Image 1 (tube, one colour):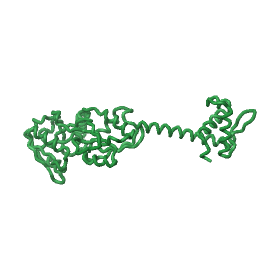
Image 2 (cartoon, helix red, strand yellow):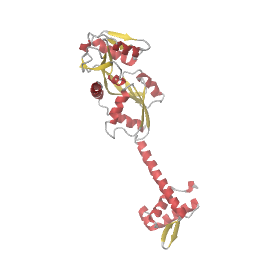
Image 3 (tube, rainbow, N blue to C red):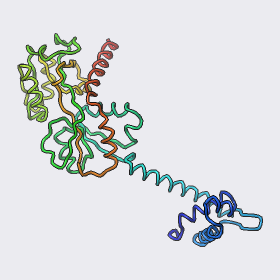
Image 4 (cartoon, one colour):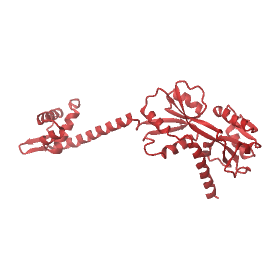
Length: 320
């Protein structure tokens, strides 16, 4: 029976029920009255119930017609809503997207997207997963991720697209008891007589070369940590000595106890941040996400670096 009911018939019946006049309904629908009457008759035959009382005095709804009218209105509203949802999905305004993100960068990215205007980030179900940059390459190829926010450089990225978003400053992490801890920023020259501790290639293969090069160009004396717990050892080494560690600025969000972060004046002390995705992915949701993220200002992480430092200083002052 349902297969015999046409959407057109529901629309025609609803128009008659609203105006209680075939003439007015026909005029509103821009059709003549006879075909309108025939379609309503066919609808009544299909469902097996009389919906309208017809007389020389006009048209009224039967009890069955009144209930059917309410249901029909709901069906038509739901169909219209479904059409709107489909159109929004086609434009990439609705849907789910899972993005890998190097640790702490997801916090920075969320702050940018939430504060860059109501049209920047559509109402997507956006999920960020903290995943090392190198691992995101394989996950994207397996379609386990839709996109990735990665620190550069990356290993082989065949069949994937990498777009440069910005550069993330390298900052100096020192103990709060360090002689330089009260400084707002330092130059690499200021650190030339300070032993620098860095993680070995096995721990941070993608960033090792960049950070090692920065230390080498600044003539910093470096100690490389390669233990299984190298990150913990790095933090302990800085806390318990006068050593300095060069780390990405977003590491400030770790809220590590006993250390502070100093901005570095040299602009070349930075790491590239890229947007990684499958070049053949036709998803409208991905396209909309890429358009939003591509608005990321190239110096945003530098601004975030400064604002985060001021925020940490205010927190320190307010807590005594």
